[in-house]
Image: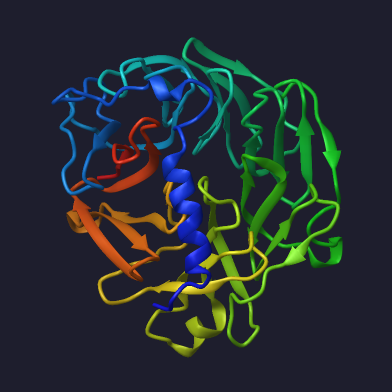
Length: 367
């Protein structure tokens, strides 16, 4: 692992962020879960120690299920989860869960928005409004989506990136759309776009991960910049996952596969977690695969909501009942710590708005 830069600036941002209220939208009234058992279908639990111990669930998780959507809402103590196509809600800070509707699509994810709502979307272009009361289908601007972002001040204002790297905007909650900016890649240089992440404070700031590279815009897609630093030799790096720090949007994490290192048989297999301190213009590798750390293609990345120097990422498998490792990368100490659990995978992470030390985990069972 290599030292991250700009530690002093990031430390100041972390202090400012941790001293601030949880949010201005009422999440300060959130409570921490007090139950000893989570009541529901077993797809969501919580931990107070970063995954060392998980709160037991009333029902055993039955295969095959993937909980890819898990968000907290600004209504106090309210969460939504998506396990397969089933939308569920909790109204008591994650202690009890009940189903409220069915969402179309496959491997559907959730993006939280202002106004006690979330937007459910998948790579095939399915799009829905999800609330504690149910599901409303919406119109998608494209046949394939790579990511969705919601303005944290206006829940009706959305942006998505389609599979070709073109941004689209809706100002009426996903009912109508218009294209904004230009595609991130020219038609003759079209890439497979694996992921798109939006800065919730500024939807003009978007990071795309794709085959061979990553690109970033700060002006809503009018211009795009190719990220530097992913490869020491300038060769192609496939960027499968990305996360913008909620605590400091200048801090961006991505997972990339360096194809030249892979072909050369490097000890890391070419797999790294990278960190940027300038919003995604330049990255440095901070975690390498190896020494007990497994980095798959496209791992779940969850940036700490108040500390820009902390990132959680996950590896898990149902093969041979190996279970799941939740890794915590700490840039202050340049260290990765590991917490293990017996579930096949952890496929979603959310943080309690009143106390981010309480982490909600969306679970998967494959075997």
